[in-house]
Image (cartoon, rainbow, N blue to C red):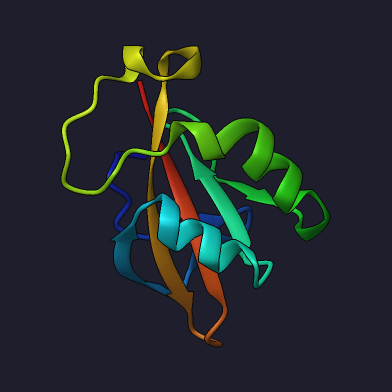
Length: 105
């Protein structure tokens, strides 16, 4: 896998999905209210599809303080834990919104 992602996939193979847009923290907070599906992408690892019951915990503990603002230069070593995430919104074939977080080191 390489970043930025060109497609989504799960254990059974490619998932029909369209990347809509990159999004920042304010948009993410708004979308989190709807209880979206979260996916975490890291080079060298399979995509991690977060179970809905874990969405808010993962957002709060792992993601929220480490989001890169779209179209800005940020050094990962300036973020907690030395890494950050670029966030994007995708739509699955059935219209389900998926928030994808690509880990940058």
